[in-house]
Image 1 (cartoon, helix red, strand yellow):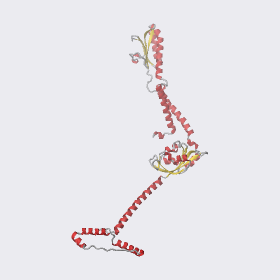
Image 2: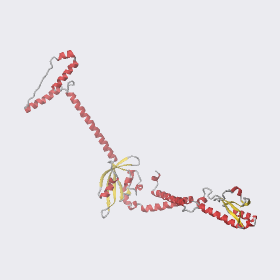
Image 3: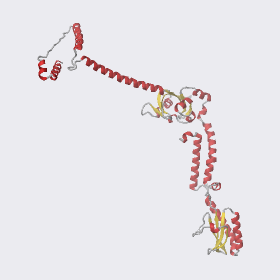
Image 4: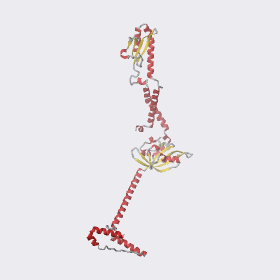
Length: 401
């Protein structure tokens, strides 16, 4: 979400800063960058060894006053030295400067650390004792001094100063490389005055110009569309299985002919699904080779909705008509038939008979009419009941049919 709100210049700047930070950290891990801790440790050891060499003569003469003055002077004039002392080989403390007991940490292995450095003191080619120095920690917290001598400071400098420089350079460079700059302002104004959306693309399908009506239709700014591939927008075809190769402007560039009235769908940021009628035309050079394409977009969402509504209404009407016809057939059957035998009733019989009689006279064909009575039918009803009598009537009607 944040990436969509940032400008291309800001996104590229963040990318360059991230790449630079990764390179610096990798160089630190590989040991390419100078090790400030190691350098400081080496410098402190050299200072202590040099001072031990200077004090060796005073130690051989047991000149404790010179030893004391020298150590006090070093502690007083060096902010990095917290305390110093000279200790005999039997570990007796001879002289000290500063709060050495409070700062010095004795190590059983006698190995120096970045904050506690010791070196042997020789007199007459034999070890007379040792010189001990307590230094301030190399990093005393997050401050300018510690940052200045660490990779963290270098990273902070690159992020703040380098990021500002990257941004200015990229903004200038992208302005010069802006593909929309090849379109004159008067042409842009003419395209913006059109009611339909317009896209102009290069041969790689990168958008060079998107007019304001198109930007409004798809819910984006015209500037944010420049440089993107037209097929990267959320296009959906009307037919399942179609892919991006069937987009009309791509076919126009590939085949060198215009595509007209191609339906395409797009889901805009608001969530609505819009329907477009798209025309695509190739932009040809003098040799007839496609160098880009121009596509126009008509928003027919409302028309398509009304068409769909009309189709649904017609379908409902067809269903209703079929139902009415079915019911009319059923009513016509009920109106012309005897409910017990389903034979034609009196009125329907005479209607049919009149037509047949007229046709017989016209065509000179024979016409027969049979009148049948059921003998002793009253005895059937009296003996077996009217239900059986109805069954007899139905049976007789079926025989006649």
